[in-house]
Length: 231
Image 1 (spheres, rainbow, N blue to C red):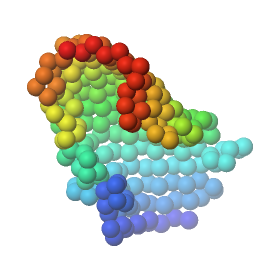
Image 2 (cartoon, rainbow, N blue to C red):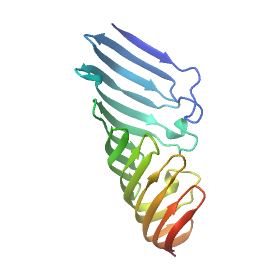
Image 3 (cartoon, rainbow, N blue to C red):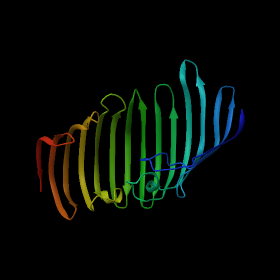
Image 4 (cartoon, rainbow, N blue to C red):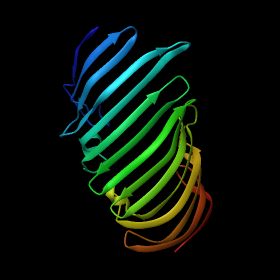
């Protein structure tokens, strides 16, 4: 089976309300049990586009087979995808690979004076972010962690930030310049609970100077077993 594939979404909407995709086109090639989508183009609201190719082939003894995809992003605007995101113009590359044992990803995204490089995998119902490096203007962050995708959705997170201004990403958050290392672990279901620790070097947030240490257990309603020394 060979021919063009065209899908049109008549009501694209932010992720909170629906699917933020306007159109998908590709050249479909299904032969000898192998599927190829060449010339793939996904059109997003605004001027955003994702282009690339996706291949799938069967593997003996595996129900899922194996897949490979490479994609290029151009002028993707997060504000068009979610009402909570700031407006940016994101470009870069995304590579995906999937086999029976694991699915892997690697991305390199740029937006104005920002860059995100990350790699990780999904296996045995757990998402692993093996390494993530973010540079935003003069800020830097290094992150790694895990997220369970079943049961209580157990998570771990560790990293550090330098000269980090959260307002760059979330418009409701005050200005800041944070220098810190941190770790957290817990679960997201039935409600987020866990433990965190934070070591804050001299920083600024919402017009205040901050420095110190903090650790505590948390639930959505409160902190407990807290040991906080921040001034």
